Every structure is written in C-alpha cells, then in structure tokens.
Image (cartoon, rainbow, N blue to C red; front, side):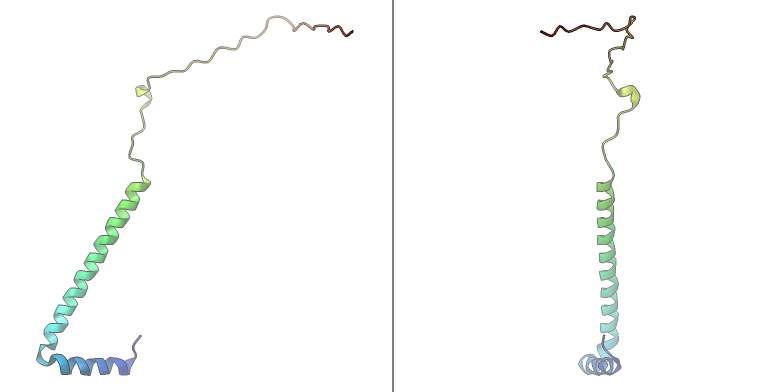
Length: 91
C-alpha cells in the first residue's frame, strides 16, 4: 500500500495534469467505481442463484396416490408338522 509521501506525489501529479478539471475527473472516477461495484455485486448474485438452483432437485417426487405399481410378496406359511429326519445310508 502506498504511504503518505507516495499519495502526496500522486496528488501533485494529478493536480499538474488535470488542473481545473480535477473535480470533474474525480467525480467521473467515483461514478465509475460505483458502477463497477454494482456490476460485481450483480455477478455475485447470479453465481449464488445458479449454485443454489443446482443444489436443489428440480424434479418433483411422486405423491403416494400417484404410484401405479404395487408389489406383493408371497406369504410365509408356518409348517404344521415337525420336520422329518431322513436317515442317510452309508455303504
């Protein structure tokens, strides 16, 4: 960052170059800076909106009554008798 002496030198050079037009030049420079900041702010807003819209899913989820397929599983039946033990013959 420029120090005190550097700012004084820049001020003297600006006074020599612009003279009577210095207030007009400073005013237009200030307007340019404000316009630049507005532009940067607008770009930041667009980037934030774009990143927010990409993070949110856009496809709606189907409601429970809209589901058309129903799956049924076979029912489990409890065996009525004890399991039979099979004897294996070994030769």
